[in-house]
Length: 125
Image (cartoon, rainbow, N blue to C red; front, side):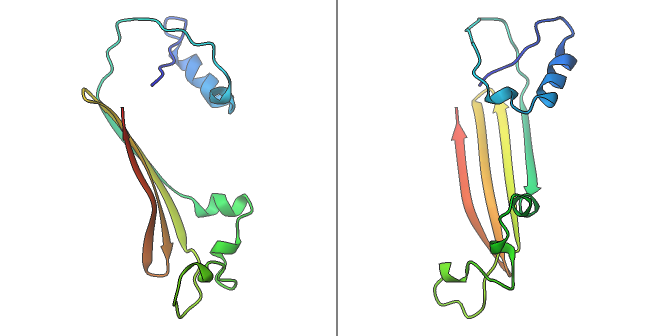
């Protein structure tokens, strides 16, 4: 886990604004160095859920969601009706406590009345 700390006292607001304004900030190569500093991290846990379908359609992936094309019917054996994706949700969470860090990502796809969990991975460090 990496912590980004501002160089200036009371510089947290400027650092957060830098993160927000530069979409490629975390994609760059950083010249990191190890520094031992006294640091206390409070326990925290948060999660985030969003509906993925709209984003995927905006990026051009439309066929799995089109009920008139039923693009994914051939992926399932012996299904008596056309199959397409109704909704996709992505959920992620992170928990940091005295025992370490745990994070998880999960993707759920909904077809008609059924639900399929595409991924559920927990990692602990």
